[in-house]
Length: 252
Image (cartoon, rainbow, N blue to C red; front, side, top):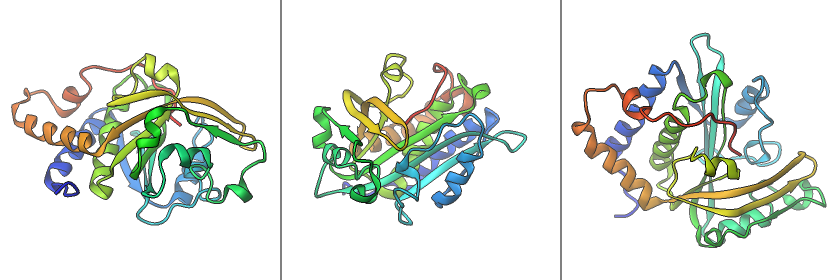
């Protein structure tokens, strides 16, 4: 059946990336209370303000419909953060959800500024429906950038999201610079994903839409598991981070 997920394969997939993070000097932990997440991000120097998507004061996330990952260094100081949430778009689609501002606010009529707007002209956004997971708020501290942590976090988030929700799609929004530099290893990308203005948040974006289908996510994890026995004697960190990506800024 399409919705079934092999927990052992997913576990091995996540473990390989967790071990790679450890060898990079990062210890990861996962949480589900977004009040705690915001308190962590607000106390983290150089981390920009978390978008309302992941802030309970603007868009509460029900238990079981979101999680976050925090990585700390050897001094127990925050070195990276990432977050994900599940949207039920069975009666809608991603473009409609963005443009209605319900993607950002629980009640746009009451919470949004009169001049707030979001325009989504990415053609595929109207075909992204069902169980949709949004990955965002990715931030890596300056001294850990360029060490493959973007790829490691992508692996962690894909594995956890598949295990928790078996989604129809995963998606993200990111600037054009990240596409040009191939920062994010995603199956699909399109421009005009989110022309966004949130006045009270002082946010103005023009982001690309990045997405992966649920079938592609399962195939990625299955192929990773099949290839595990055939890889060389390199450590998990060496296997995953053998091609270091460019310095990371911040994903929406």
